[in-house]
Image (cartoon, rainbow, N blue to C red; front, side):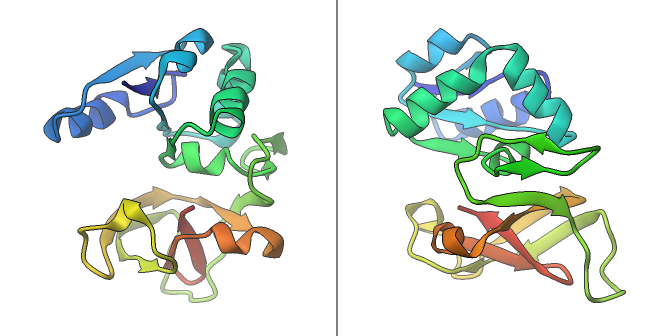
Length: 176
């Protein structure tokens, strides 16, 4: 069963509703031992990097995520903060250590085009860089909605893990 992690910062109802709409059952939990039973793990998130990662720590979810995703290779879908947590560090409201699964940092969006405002809010076409099952069945340049002021800046040595980007005055990693 797909396990959706509730750490107090996620848009849980929207995520669960989306899975139900395609006939997938989910289990919502904040219990680290429940991740052992998961067939896949979803970590949604809305809010600030530091608050979110601190919630994961206080619920003892970091080690369980490391074991199940990195150790046992369970599929992982990180949405918004759930993607950003993959970084080594996040710099929203201070400096915070992330999961460290991807070499990179979460930094404030600094567009090189004055017409692009921050926060980045709106629909954007993605440029899918690599073949990825996640995008199967979608248009070649699928459109997704964004609401964020910070983004994952992937270091060169991890650049091959980037599956899709969008442009908002700078390249923004949208999928890994």
